[in-house]
Length: 133
Image (tube, rainbow, N blue to C red; front, side, top):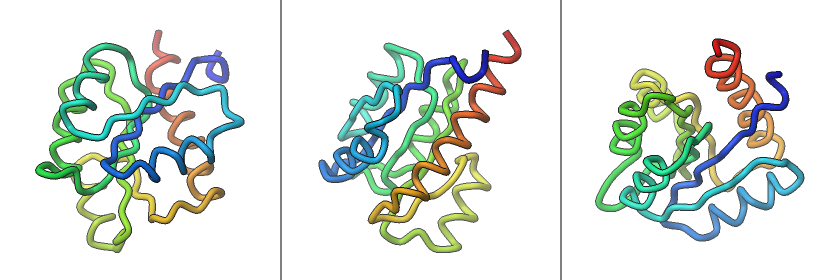
């Protein structure tokens, strides 16, 4: 049952190229991908439908990934949050994981790294949410 649970990804970034790169990397997957360019748009998607994974840019002016994480934390079926940044250094990794993010991805995206990270995150999300049903 775990492998058939649908995965929905919410890409949150003010950069169109982030959405396009993620869609290109995941084009062979049967996952649903939604796009949001602001925290308000992301909150609207999160309120209207279940989301498994949120791939969010570190900076969402005037907000940040921490604000996105706070929105996700309030959801009953909490998606896993993956933070993206051109400056994916040790400090960001430590802070993100300490505050509850699942992972950090460096930009520009590396196809193998993104697929590996999102596949493992999807498995973990399915295990946590679907196997308990």
